[in-house]
Length: 319
Image (cartoon, rainbow, N blue to C red; front, side, top):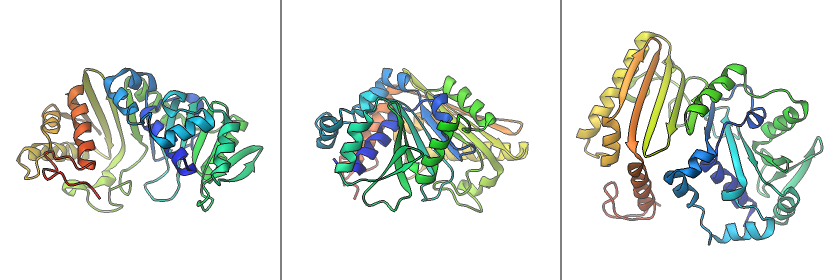
């Protein structure tokens, strides 16, 4: 298993084991653009979480090599993760803080045998991929905390760990605590979505809506027999809130008549949606049976592997 595969294992574990641990949020930058997480215990206890964990196969040669060399199993040993990103660019501007069980000396020997470059910062070893230019790194702060991300952010996390200062600003930390308590999975945007991910930096977004009018956005998911989804958008004005509610409702109603109609599970989810503008806020609530979510996962997996389905009737694999 290459160093790249090891890092991917940690990141994949993050996708199924995120939680709002104050010890991890203290390592993050003060004002990230986005923070996201999933409650590990709730995820593991739900059928959906079990299916996510099952995506890391026992017979995967890379996983077996990792287990043999280090004893580290991301499915078992990763406890909690917090992910934060400063912006939507391609630069290494984020940080992943992982709480788990790590034999740092064994993992260190393993990654160095794979050709990892190393350096030391304030007594903490930092590791880089053999092909890295030095901007992406990871480090173990102790036997239970690892950090991955841009080199500058990894070093800042080391500084904050040693000084006992820093971390999320109080307002954002309070919001993270609130949403991570109420929802198993959550994501918080600390500013406008303009320029983040697939959204344009300037001008209109979907339906001609001005994304700059969204000052912040938050979403959460609670897993159970019924999957509950909630979202809130903080707008510039009540008028902007009403406009966004109209755009969301319009696109949801258009889904049924679309030529490339989405799967029935998605249509049912949209039918359950309630959109409520309230002052500068837009609140959105949806729900779906967990079996529908599992079906959607299965459809997506089949599409990627070339299996025929509604969206890919010819069964052509994605190249």
